[in-house]
Image (cartoon, rainbow, N blue to C red; front, side, top):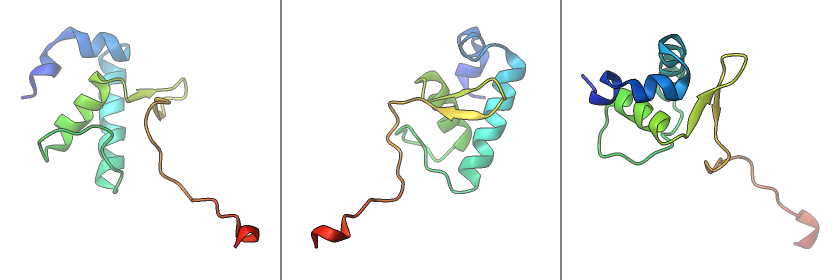
Length: 86
């Protein structure tokens, strides 16, 4: 078992056991669907990755119980090109 889940710190950080369970489940679905980890850990254990994302304040649940990423996480997206300058 992951040691961090035995501690109350992670439960309190998220706002309770139900929210922690919801956040873990939703983030695991995203990672299993191809989302990239937001932290670098030397493991392929997806559960450990999610726990570290929570402990490092990379993800949280919003008021609608949707997983959100903090603003300091680099996000990849479409690149804007200025074709007029070519």
